[in-house]
Image (cartoon, rainbow, N blue to C red; front, side, top):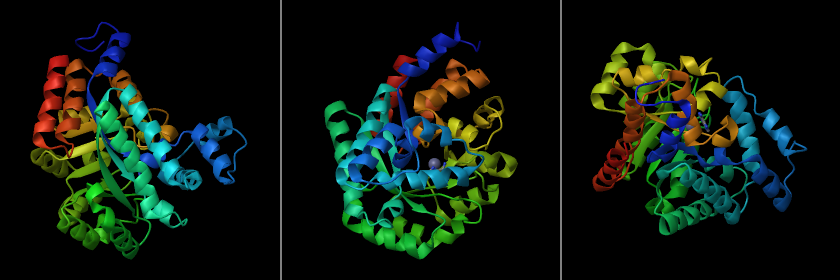
Length: 341
Ligand SMILES: Nc1ncnc2[nH]cnc12
Ligand SMILES: [Zn+2]
């Protein structure tokens, strides 16, 4: 057992009560099969599954694209403001159960507007649940609009236009979907416009794509954080740069395993990232599809790598220092971690 824990059960209890932030969560990826079935029925949307068990059996992926095909199909049951509210409220309840104190949520508006669901419907449902969680439970949040990188930059520009009436409710923009063949450079102009609007910037990079995509995200998009970033480790100069600049990486262990970014959790690069001085964090990405929410991700990687108390505390601290919270809020959470640890 790692230093500081008498047993795996003691480490599990420590993780469960550790205050943490989640910085990489696609709200559409938290759609549990039970809710998918319920919404399909309520909205009269046909889905190609006969049971919840059949849905879960379909969640066997050999790469990112395999997953994305089923993820875009799943979100077709989301039609009304109430649907987006229920989806978001269900995730926030899970997050609270994992002692998550702050969340930064991605949403994919193009996955909805292309089906005729308006931007205002999506954002009204999500923000109603976020506001409720803040008022009732003190769970704070930021909202990040992701552009789908397999679509054109013109489509992303039109999406940013559609977001303008709601820009007060949006904290940042991101870049997700099929990575290889869709480098960050494709979105340089729309990210520059988002930056000029005062929005924070993040991008998925180095999940399946090469280290050069991480460099492009930094140099051309000028991102504040890198989502995933695993393949940065292939380039020692890039690792040094990320460490020196303190760039937060939002790492997603169960996602990496399910999408075959790593072959085995014991080979996960999280400890190597920490040892290299990278500001790595642990997140769930698409928890309904990948088999677990944030504590399950901490648990899986901690068990496989035998992470110590100090390493777990570092990961939780990184989740707040890498967040878009105001400094005094970050300090309040860091003090809570120190008091707990
Ligand atoms: N892990 C992931 N990578 C890229 N796009 C995504 N969309 C939802 N999850 C994603
Ligand atoms: Zn992601």
